[in-house]
Length: 274
Image 1: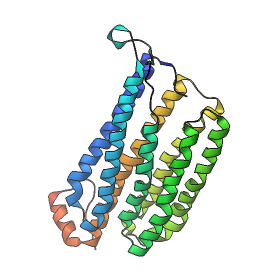
Image 2 (image 1 turned 30 degrees about the horizontal axis):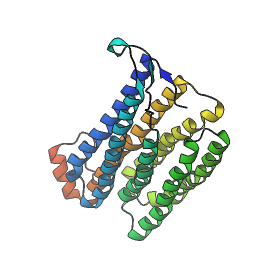
Image 3 (image 1 turned 135 degrees about the vertical axis):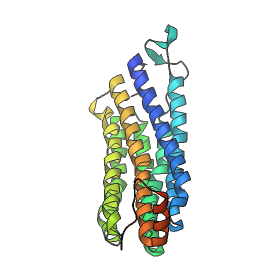
Image 4 (image 1 turned 180 degrees about the vertical axis):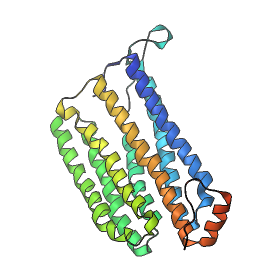
């Protein structure tokens, strides 16, 4: 599906969106690292995982960015002209799958960790979600690299099975655990599940485009934009919501901690009254 050539505008669009993702992931990780002391220790595991996720994503987007620049070149003076695939170079879409294989299970670990459930319940949820997330990515890759629509459809269908199972756990089994959370964070935690569903929904749409004979430079550029926006939502924005939940729960658990933090001033979260 990778096009043979891109216009100047198409090249600049992909270039700028890849740059945007790098900045979003990198500086979200920096912000969370600096902010770790502003939550209680019991919730720092969730934020640490979020930092790792954003760091992994930033690294792979650097690799994707370099691969894109090497794959498409122009002979035009000043770089103002069509970009064609460089001889002996190709855009490596595999970096995305390596990234997803690592980060998608960790996104679910973030959610479970910030709930601070009992060790038994936490282990049960992780044993269901993490293998299913890894299997979803592994099964999708053979179809992604195949030019045969039958193979693509087969592996797309297979990867959908663990995806539906993850949704079942998140929206059915996890609901009971959400009811045990402080009232102030229930809505945010529920929204996190919908954010995952919304952002993950971009990937299967891009996956089936070749099966619908939707190809060419515009389709490929649109896919890169979709992947980029989905990764920002599913990792950077998701991590910031996790951080907000951890802050609120820290305040609810420890009124003295809430008082000290309130004395420092906080534009996003205020200490709850009892």
